[in-house]
Image 1 (tube, helix red, strand yellow):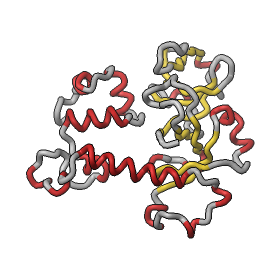
Image 2 (tube, rainbow, N blue to C red):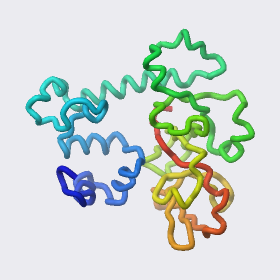
Image 3 (cartoon, helix red, strand yellow):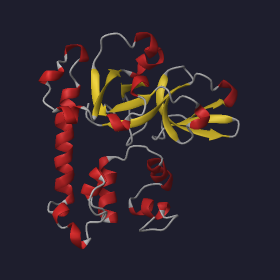
Length: 243
């Protein structure tokens, strides 16, 4: 809004070489891929430290912000990714064998994360019946997970939603968000025509809901509003490429 005006989304999308609809999906909460974020920083001149913490000046060219940009944006982002990668390695430990006193992160950092079950997408439909079974866990930021007691991490098995969900990445799915009328233009896990769970965009179109992949060679899946009950398993609230 500050740089391109109240309706500047299409112009920003053009500069980022994205479809305008893709940018609007980012604005609704879909995780922005790293390469798009780098281009966004370059195009807008935003201060990466402000993006990470909310502190300091918004733009890198503001005179009093010299200290916060003593490192280049790319270097700052690289340092942040290295830190996240090291934290992610801890997340692969099975929760049944974790002794919190021996964690390599301090208690303050520990409070910023939540451990969620890590499952395959095929398990999701019956997860409520098997959620107490011993399984791997995945560590993610607690602020990304509004309903941790009803959320789970799911492995991404194909490229249908690339680049938003790269193959072998991990998606955080909130199982309490399963009403299709409230999830228009959101990424969800839903049952396809064969009753198999898939990641898709959910779009409301008249008397139908449409499940749309990001990659065109995956078919669009329509179903009527009256048949929508139970087909949405949850909404994707976060994505991690560390897996």
